[in-house]
Length: 273
Ligand code: HPA
Image 1 (cartoon, rainbow, N blue to C red):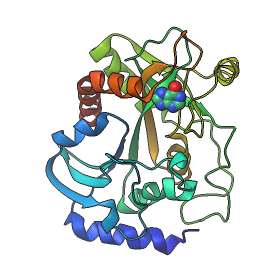
Image 2 (image 1 turned 30 degrees about the vertical axis):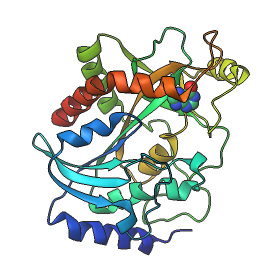
Image 3 (image 1 turned 90 degrees about the vertical axis):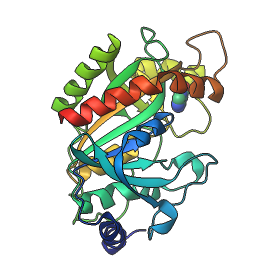
Image 4 (image 1 turned 180 degrees about the vertical axis):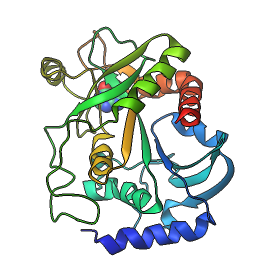
């Protein structure tokens, strides 16, 4: 798959376009959070299709661009549009940008996503900081030859998500909504939503929410020592929790309803770290 030089070539291309800017914070804007890109000042926009080795977004309506600029005093680099395994990319492609961010000097990664609520106390529209994950059903994103330049072969995963940052983010969510959730995110491959039996099993295993992203990126970030924090927007109750069918419409509608709150939470968080 990719060699170290492939990541370097992409980083070099972006570095030249960034004109001396040095973002220390990267953010992946999940479903519905594209609005944050409107808040980024003094923007430099680079389409994924221009960047050597970058995967290209296949989903209609996915923006597919990097945005470098300012939120408050902080220079950030944002991925507007992410890659998913269910689209057909392999996991090395899904996570390619994270290692490029590392080479650009990024120290903190904020991952956002839409997820289904497994914990019956949750409600659609809640935000859950992710304190751990379950990922049993796909190959590891680190499978294959280890790139020692990024990290070791065998890595400890007892703190994938930085505890201090996670608690900071939780406080900010609480300030904005009065109902911050914290829990375990179960990663499923998609594109099917889960079956009710899978959700019951995941609940027994300790999952609070379920989604189709975030974990591959978090593992790669942790491997190369980027501080990572993740927040899930609970867009729906997971399959079988309620006596109704799941739909992408519902996911989109909830994400749409809470997007301005989500944006304010992330803005505050970026200003605080
Ligand atoms: N399952 C998996 N992914 C999701 C869900 C869900 O219920 N909601 C939003 N993304």
